[in-house]
Image 1 (tube, rainbow, N blue to C red):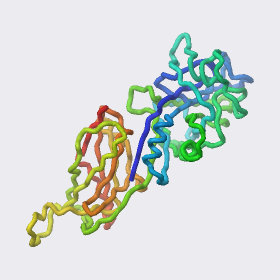
Image 2 (image 1 turned 60 degrees about the vertical axis):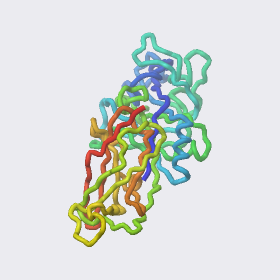
Image 3 (image 1 turned 90 degrees about the vertical axis):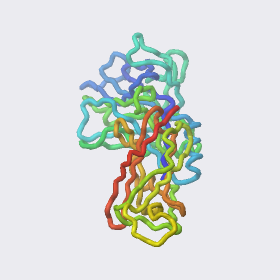
Image 4 (image 1 turned 30 degrees about the vertical axis):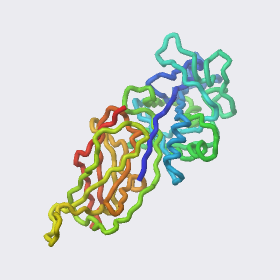
Length: 363
């Protein structure tokens, strides 16, 4: 029932047609292949071939904080990249997420710089071009050396004609290498498959928002794990849809730090049965069914920031009632978010709850 998100600390695109250019501060990351009908023997400036690959790094300290928050539970990690533009997409295509195997310097260049900036990672080098920085090394390159280096660990995401085009791919094997197997964290390398890059006449372009974007869509790494517990004690479980659900302890404003805030859900009958009691029958709290879930929605865009997940957004219960935690670090500051609930009743009926339970994240 836990979701913890971190944002990228560095990223850049590498261009085979401009092997010395750095784009570390550009607002866009590109994954593309613009090939001529006749393949070039060498990828360098002036050739018709233009392969574009992107590097994305999440700081080791942020990764370790997330891992300590998971606290030994089995976790799943997903890399999210948000599409800004696309060109000439096939009905189906794949994207590869590779584990980079050399460290690199982000630099401060932009794609639009004229003359180009050469003070950081580029197609030929891990750092500044023509300054004695390390070349990309290895034997897995297209035509000639350049364009990054990577280990044998990688994952892919396949896209169909009607699929959303944002990248949302399980990268747990790579993250496990960093956090459990103690392999160096050199980030992700995002690219098209070699079969696409080596195909003469391939023409496909994908642009994603970078960590320097002035939007709410920077590259994100999401950790999910199940730390839910369910014990109703003496509470009666909600069994019908004539139920009033409220979140009574919503403070309304939270900082985007590592705080975990536990929200309590109060559930009571809308039309309680009469009974002899010294207390009000309208204040009797009930437990939500075990198949109950929470989600977070951006108020302005109405996009699901954390969607319902039957494995990772389950609502817990103890003798005082139902509850769930939200980690505030992965939410963009100066924005409003809404809490949504989904209740699966024993009858099979599903209750979707939107009571405008909103809160704001501040710096």
